[in-house]
Length: 119
Image (cartoon, rainbow, N blue to C red; front, side, top):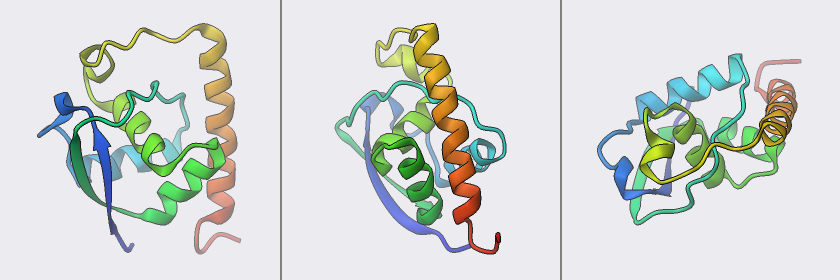
């Protein structure tokens, strides 16, 4: 699998906690078993460069109608212990969780159809 360097701005509190390997694992988990993503903390002051399969990021982001950067930040926030509390996020409501789950399932269905090698 080809990995491209992708740069995204993240909150400074995440500095030193995220690696390409972690993000690739979280992305693979997300593709296998969709779940709602955390709220986007927004671009922070820290630039993070990751070696990730860009086509996979693009397909998932497109399916969720998010920018690639927003998708990555939300994916990281959903998996990084304490990420949402570290940035002062409040838990989202039940309705938002349900809609997030539906959007995630739809994104995965689109991602499976766009994955090279699937027919």
